[in-house]
Image 1 (tube, one colour):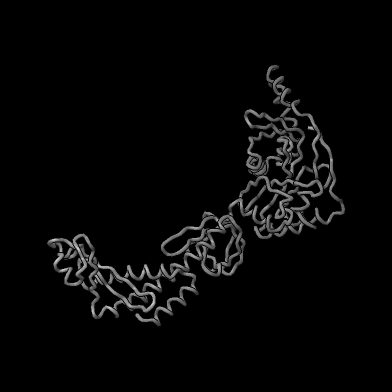
Image 2 (cartoon, rainbow, N blue to C red):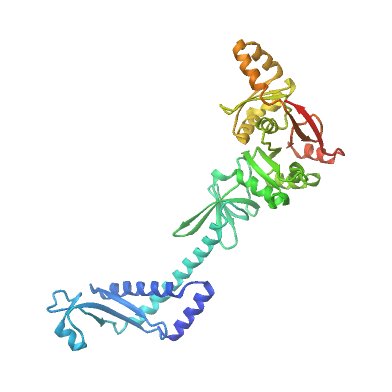
Length: 407
């Protein structure tokens, strides 16, 4: 190698943001391997590159002893003094063993090492860039689909959407641009592996953060999310400011904000409900779009009995129990739903002692609670069932109304 090579190497390291020492250390280690491979020696060979001139020297270090027994590790004091009269027993003699044709081998090795280190450095840069974006939202374009694994072009690299993180029943096509949740970034020998998700509940959170400025600013907060990807999501929100309605902020003017999220998720239904510090109210809200008559809570068992009008029972439970199931996930409470008729029958079959216990639970918190809705019969929340229903709501002239119900 020569000075021109050193200058070129410095340019490359600056351009790629690689430490020169990293390159030199790797190069010296590779040259040691090349030396041993080509010259088949057992010597404790070391390589040193002059950072100024590019000159390469191969040397070995020998311990100065009275009588040498291992020629690869030791040198007698008599032989050492021939080379350097100041050497004494116990010193280390540095013996140069650079082969005459080692320059050609060094040049080939240097090229390979530099190319590999540049690749490694670029992979590290990509890894550091994306590992910092774990749990964030990203936009990618489908590059190809192979055995149900979807590969996304992210510009500098590609990422995968495995079958387990896809939404069942949704058709994906090459060229589609989607918003995705960065689930995990792994470091591998082939470079960073970026795993994306379309089914993770946190995708909903990131989409609302993107569409709702009040969430970005910390005025409106997301309390919890329950999701059955591709079918329905419930999200509980609350406002830290009395002047900001959390439902209105999340829905947007004429539903523009939530519509953008629904469209992104291929018409997945979204129920937006208001979180309340009183668990009875929160449970009632979580069952949106069903109307709730009463909520009886058992704090010890973290369970609730919810009473709904007879005509609302199937709506409260939902298709295949989905509405009740999502409400339970959203609140992290066990929820048992009964119609008024079912509750009357249930109550009549209780013993006097059991009736007294139930009455005590029902009388624990007989306060009024607010329900912010579009009409005085709706629950505290908004359910986006489908686009037509959604547009009917937001084309109406009625403003928000605040009604009070007793539970």
